[in-house]
Image (cartoon, rainbow, N blue to C red; front, side, top):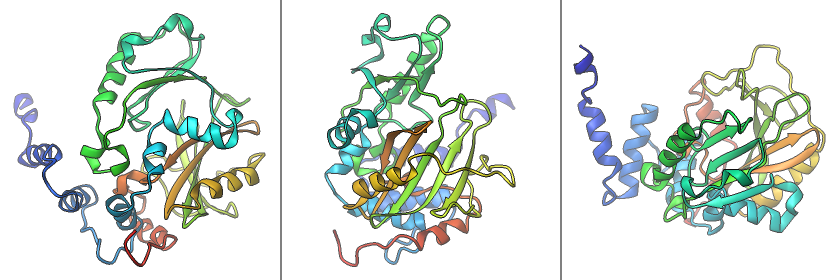
Length: 300
């Protein structure tokens, strides 16, 4: 039974073959992945749901800044150029491989990130260099560097990206947390947000409208307790101003912020939330949230 359980299913083998078949048209591939992930058909001719519309953007929008935003190193330089260094988490260094990192030059606490990978796979946090497991970090980050999000999800912004590892300052607020404020900007305007909190202990998230009313949507497995209230952070109006500044030339842009006791940092600028195949809870949220986003009537 143990041996049989390790044998890939025909579906898994087919998926692996499709994933690396770069000769397949992107439109065909994303339809296959959409159905496999969400269990429903992609509507690309008349997109209605949030995922339909993000996938449309993935296939057809080609703003050169998308490539800058997708690169965790390049986006820091871009944000610093526009807003100043105070709005980016300080950078300690950038390297093309893990073995190039000179750990002696790093402080006791720091964060390592693969510039090409998602946060779930390409981030390693060191809170004490004395006990830091370098071997585990090497395995995790080397695996992340091998990822190609263009191949995996046909996300154009990642095509041909220069992959590297960066080290940046470990930041917390006075409560030992660092909340992640994700502002979903549709047609240049923040329309709703999600907030991730307690990442290092009991990770939760909550969806809110722009008036700080809770929305009936959740990230699977991360639902905040009933009655949980998030207070508007110091400097939130400035966060809105910055979000509009970056989102004004995009059909969709998710602008992520960290706010450490009023000190605002721009985190990620994301054009393809969930690669256009995000599992909302409940699934009906996909259609509800899609109503916020209007696609261009003609090709871009």
